[in-house]
Length: 443
Ligand SMILES: Cc1cc2nc3c(=O)[nH]c(=O)nc-3n(C[C@H](O)[C@H](O)[C@H](O)COP(=O)(O)OP(=O)(O)OC[C@H]3O[C@@H](n4cnc5c(N)ncnc54)[C@H](O)[C@@H]3O)c2cc1C
Image (cartoon, rainbow, N blue to C red; front, side):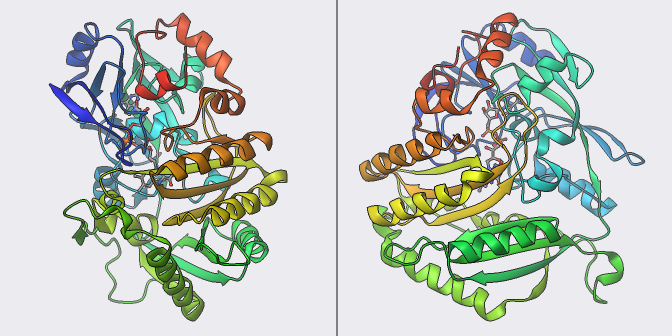
């Protein structure tokens, strides 16, 4: 089937062939005739990582849960199973995922391929750290088991490898036990970047989950005021009587039905939202019990929220820089965004630890993510920000990227040479390619 494909940011768009196999055997048969292709999960990567150069293999129909070992918390699922499906089945039995991104509408294959990080990365690592083993279909048609002890080079290249080592068919994951589906959230409103960083450091030392929202209203000085959120799983004994122990996740309550006009997210509307958001946190400023979906996935409450940015789409610039350079780089980025008069609708800051894969995004340091509408001015600004990130020894997250240059990419991903060597060895060079790998000249 021919289709127009894009990532969550709806930029860039490409047309190509899409095939949807329903079993590992069908996948093996179909991939032999495709050149070059890449696997795709739920299409939640923002840019062009999940769009094949010629063909795209949708993994969504490989959606069976295979086995659950309730003694060790080991779950085996096909790669097209979504995080939402896992939580729906396992949370009522007292198990949760060890690391979750900001949306539950992602597949296991996508989470492994991007080695996604959650609000606990600095403590327990990303999704890849909790993968016990993978079944990987190589471009030569071999179905290999990969783990830390078996085909370990391929295992470490596949975690964070953005689909460029083969199609992940199945994964065995270590889940974590929880007593309730509730999170105790604390919020601290801060006045400037230094107080935000200090509150974030304190939160990281004390809590399992931590993240900061930053107010990037154009013209606001000093930059960097925000709200720091922490979270802890609530124990059964702490839950007030009458609360459902494992609340069901709510589906989107509202949806954006059409593309909104391009200018609707502007410096005034974003500024007004930021004032309200910060003001509310400053007023509340204490602990609250929130259901798991509201804590981990607040954006999932609004269906198709990517349409808010209009037909032209939007970009997320997510960088990570080594801890020592963190404050200076974040301050410089916020200053440059403010000086350009751009109004990111979302700005999030958190700390990361090391990643598991050769191509994993995380490194010990600070990560800052900014959502911006696609305009010529945004593209110029982001090129400037890339130079700041590279000079500090940082890199950009491939799962969010749609526009960085090959030079920026090469400067940041030091495991690339090993990755490309392995790709040549398994016959992936030339056979497995996404729009992203082609744009970044990954061999
Ligand atoms: C609202 C929102 C919030 C987010 N928050 C976070 C966050 O907090 N932390 C974070 O780390 N990420 C975050 N992300 C990014 C998201 O978690 C990743 O992009 C993830 O990879 C998406 O999974 P997917 O199933 O949609 O994969 P896709 O977007 O379809 O594909 C992503 C990559 O995975 C590869 N892939 C997918 N399936 C397979 C497979 N079976 N075998 C081999 N390769 C495969 C694709 O080739 C592609 O390179 C967020 C995204 C959104 C939209």
